[in-house]
Amino acid sequence: MGSQSPRAQSLPSFEKLFRQPSIHAALFEDKVFGHDDWNKHRSAAWRHRIEPTVFFRVAVGFAWQLGAVALVSGGVGVLHILLHGRDTFLSNSHLATPFSMITFALSLLLVFKTNSSYSRWWEGRIIWGQIVNFGRNYARQALMWFPTNRPDLRAAAVRWAAAAPRVLLAHLREDTEVIAEVRGILTAEEVDWLCGWSNGPLGAGTALGQLVVAAELPEQLEAEMQKQVELYTNCAGGCERIFKTPIPPAYARHTSRFLMLYVMTCPVLLWSSTGWLTPLVAVIIAFLLLGVENIGVQVEEPFHVLPLYDICRAIEANIKEMQTAFSGDGANGGRTRPNAADLAALALVVPNMAVNRRGDPAGRGAPKERRSSASAPVDTAPAPLAAVPPASTEIAVAATPPPPVVTDAMRGTTGTSATASTTGQASAVGRRSSVPSTEVT
Image (cartoon, rainbow, N blue to C red; front, side, top):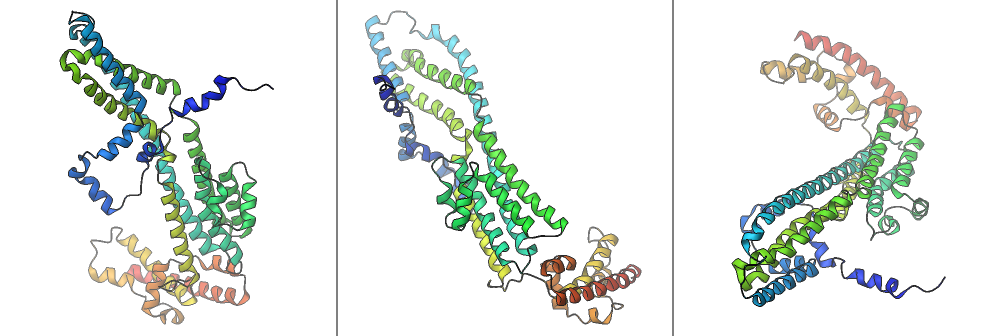
């Protein structure tokens, strides 16, 4: 193979002239809003304030376009001097009608482009909101339902729930690598295994699903966790669809070239009314119109604009907090499983709450004495259940523990099974005795 031609060798350097500077692209990066940000955003004094530094950073992205408009404006001035004010095509009367026609058409193109880009940006944000829900739900369910005698599975599930969003982030951005994103989350063996996948999110989804299967959960719980894995893979597919399918390039390019032709011919129309102020006026008009078009272009691909790193860090913080709470090391003393007293209290409270909902769905209209009696322990309950203190009842309702049968399957110990079985029988007796008595009351 021979060497490349001089034209081919100089092409990359030529293309650099038309690439946006980093200081321009950074203006369009989003952030996660808080209360202070919203207060600032609602302030008219801040919104309408002109910031010279921001103006300059935006203008840098349109350097050659604005320079071309200024040159054309100067050329129109020179031509006007040479023609000595004769009635030529520079007259307003000759150009007003054509410009009014194309202005309307250009406005329609810009509005459609901006609205379409915003729809893509908002869809991308919705998808990443679902990613947040996936990370929280998968980690929470794994900490609740995975067997306590398999701490390795529980730890692996938590790691992959935190790593999966970062794997998707690296898949969508060109300046990130999977290894750099998950090195501090996954083990070295897991990172090596993940790097063997050409599609990182698909590998992460596979690992998440395999962990659920390895936990040997009851069928219903396994199906529930597999729904979270399916949600993650669906979100990854939605991101790929947005990333790989832009607004039809023919439409986008025609709009951009139409706009450039419009701002280049504006000086011809403006000269008769603005004179030598035409270069300044034309550059300002070009800056404003190019800015509208550029907003649509920047948000068309939302994943370099959305605050994905902040979202991933929020997911990791939530998962870490849940892990601390379920391990019992939290400030409030987290627990992984309900005890027998909690289950007994739950057997008393839940049927009575159900009867109260059937008698008064809205929780209103019934006498105060009746509502209070429906939520109190029933006197006809068996002796072991009636001995449960009220404080334990409140904890059981707040914790909403899983069914005793699920707990037995996870623990797999003879002593615990016997205790849960006794509790289940007592719960059944409590339900049979408490429901009729409450209905009579």
